Image (cartoon, rainbow, N blue to C red; front, side, top):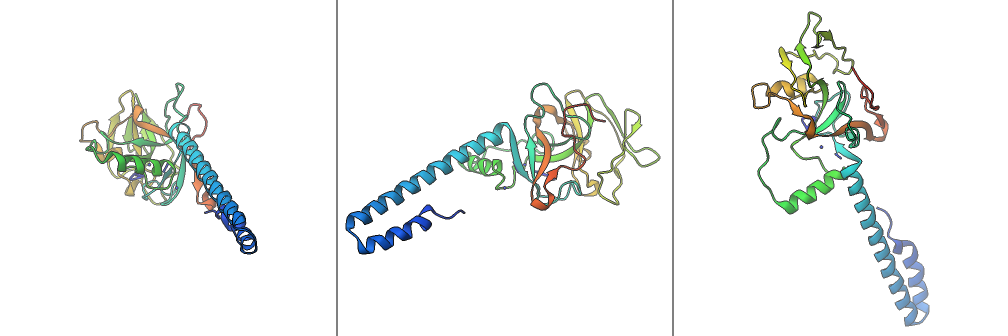
Length: 257
């Protein structure tokens, strides 16, 4: 995933460490049957721990696939809103039940077919393992996953820039307090009519972001189909020092901008 990117939907002591030592001490002065009982109890403890771990993993994968998924931020294209190494929690229910992306939303989407070419078929097993680790936030997301901010929605006329250096949407200037300090709204002039069912998206660190502007001359014209949106980045879950809502993001479902 990019923010050039790309998607992150990021031990404990063994039960025998606490319980095994007393059993060993007792078995040294007791019967062989005591040692066997201790070994059997230890084996059952490991099985219980393994079963619990498997259940937790399945629960987390289901949660990541249908409700909220962590994504790891690998690049600087969304600074200062999102920093390299942040784990964002993506709300995958934000656009179910009839809601649609709004201007100002920070979204994670699959850029295959719009930002990058459709990937060739890979190793199914390797892809499944990578997808599982990515879903748990333990690996960087797919190279086709990106995180950007929605600047224009279907039907909008998006222009850069007015005399004040601001982007205009439908003739009205857009205030963008989330831009990286010192960055302009865009050094690339453009005027875009956003087709219905698509989005015009840009990074907050405009000078470091490959976004809709970089794909103007390609098929699709830099537009992201709404159905390719995976979810809305609502929270920063890691590191703890940055825990909280994504700055400048809309976390409700009412109109925005």
